[in-house]
Image (cartoon, rainbow, N blue to C red):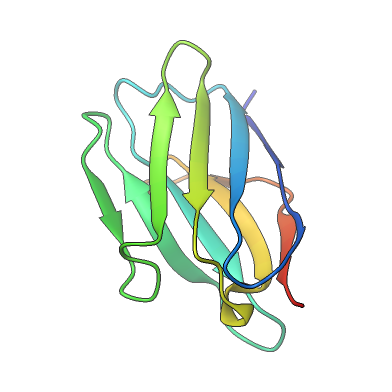
Length: 116
C-alpha cells in the first residue's frame, strides 16, 4: 500500500526557512523519481522540484537557487529545504510519486504561509 505523509509546514516570516519532509511507503526510491508540488489559493497545482532515483534534481524557475530537494533512501523520506522564503511561496505543498508514472500518488499536503 502506497502512503505519502508530509510534515514541516507552518508560518514563517519573509526571508525565513522551512524544511518539509515526506515519509513514503510503498514506492522504491532506487527506481522511481519523486517530486514536490504546490497549490496556492485560486491557482493550479504547479511542480516545484523533482529528484531522480540517481539524485539528479530539477527546479521551477520560481524556486531555483532557494529550494533544495533531497531524499534519504534508508529512511524512505523526501525533503524540501526552502530558504529565502517569499510571500508568493505561500501554498499547500504536496509530495508526489512516482513522478511521471501512472498511477501516481499524493500526500495530504502541508500548509506553508510566508507572512510578516
